[in-house]
Length: 428
Image (cartoon, rainbow, N blue to C red):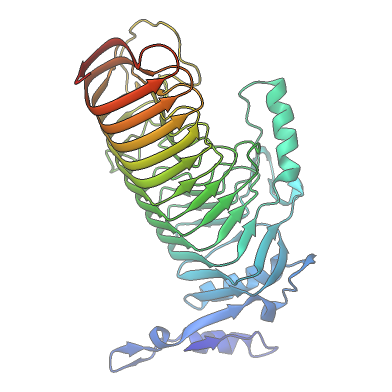
């Protein structure tokens, strides 16, 4: 049963107040049996792709939040919109055929007095019980932003031109994103930051293969995150776990993350880093497929931006035509041919206790790398039932201790299957 909230002249306040009451009869509250639905069209949204619907959609969200929660429904249509913000106990539901389309005017996202920062298209801070769901689409209209970003990077290699994210939820608990399509963000698509208990399930995320910095999902300093049954095809990291600073009260800023049954098409693979001073612990990746990605599984964390990364399990992984199946490196963006040990600091990367089991891969370049630092070797790595066929060189293992190989077959087109330097390996 659903109770639909209509915005009527002169009765709006009393209606919202009445529906906000919790009436308990035999232990059952009114809100538990009559979910409140706020249809954005009843707040004035047109959905014609031309009219700016920001005010109507935000009014629906605001009234839903003030009423104690419910569902903000976006029916079929294209809703042109500037940035909007969510409330606690709110479900944003995009029906089949609905598209929430961001404007592409930089002025709509600019933060006054801060020319290098932008408001995300959808945001929320310090919220609980937030859901984005449905069969519809959230489109960031990123094409206008990508060209200038590429031009800026050509002029200054490595430079990332500031642009808006699609969705950022900060310091939130009990977050769900299910079923929807996220596409064409100016930069990252979904960034849960300092969040707990996050579920991303059955989501499609897509942007052109050449679109710069269009990461799909970037859990940042978040805990208890599940990403499952997602189909991702983007221009940068398919998933990037980031831990840029310590979180008070937590030994590891990122921990207890599971990624299962996902397919990654174009993109830079499944990454940790490059920022990891806060630490990453307890990552499980199972039954995922990589097709035409620039990397497979990757850890990238250099001196000065590193931290402890431990207890990682990758299992039942298939890769086709990737540019390197395994890329675990304590150097970023480039790996030097030789290096000397340096003093260990709080931001020295330390990778340990990593398990890779049942991985089959074909690589259009080398098989991959597992490279630690002279002062901080990669420790305790087990590869079991792993087969990598590479178009060029084999697997490089450097500055590593406690590496175990169990039924590992690396087939390069040139050179030895394993290139070992300053490493202790069992089971070659």
